[in-house]
Image (tube, rainbow, N blue to C red; front, side, top):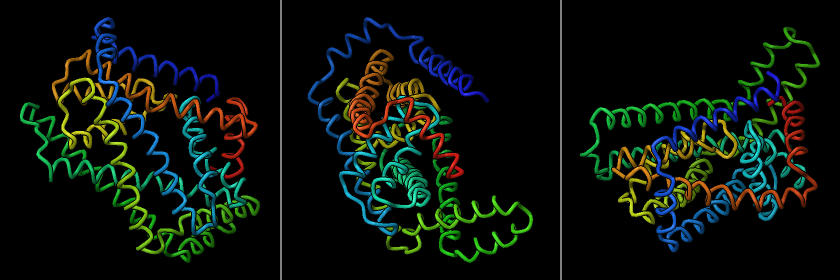
Length: 342
């Protein structure tokens, strides 16, 4: 599919989701809700957003340690650049650009560094699922006013996601912990594919497994998962502070449910998660916590703004210091995908 057509589809998707998000909103009342929201809590939420990037960087350095040493400042800058690039460009460009820039600055294998991003996403999935499960099992979710069928659907979804994440983790553990199995697979492929392609596949596979070295030792994997907990609690705290600032009665444990819903919303492939993020939050606070629609819309707008605008501005400034503009960043990410076969 041509790049221009993909871009058009993504933009139409974003516009459509925004239309759904705003379909019942009274924009005058939404603005009034924004103006009367508690600025101190919104400011505290912004501090929470900043802390998530520090915690992400600490965890990423831990995942990178078996590959080679890294500087905190470099890991932080490339993390911010990656998230900024994914905000302004489609196709999750930042997920490729971030490891490439760090590998180039720290003289590491780009493929092995990219593997740590895959591991990050797996750790994120497991942590969010654990938070959602604790919301259902440990805490009193206060769902008495919600349709039981809807709440049961949430339970089934949580259990399904938990099963999927565990299966995925087990598969990665088996592959990374037994490199000989990869060698056996590569041996079976030899003679069936061209030698030049086989050489690239072999090189990529070994470098990718090298990037997953952190999970070959159970204690390091457990530590990486433990590092994910404060990261996602910071994200959950940010998500909780904003509806509270708008007078929406969401208990702190309810932020675990909203976090899971926003993960789904962010997965919609629009730049900056525009539309998907907004509608996921609106649904969460209106359906599960009875928030008035205009309050929910105002809170969603503010939460999205503080989550994406500051990091995008700072990330674009860092990109300029790296000699990159948006167009060059997109071309570079495409080149890296081609070279690394990702």
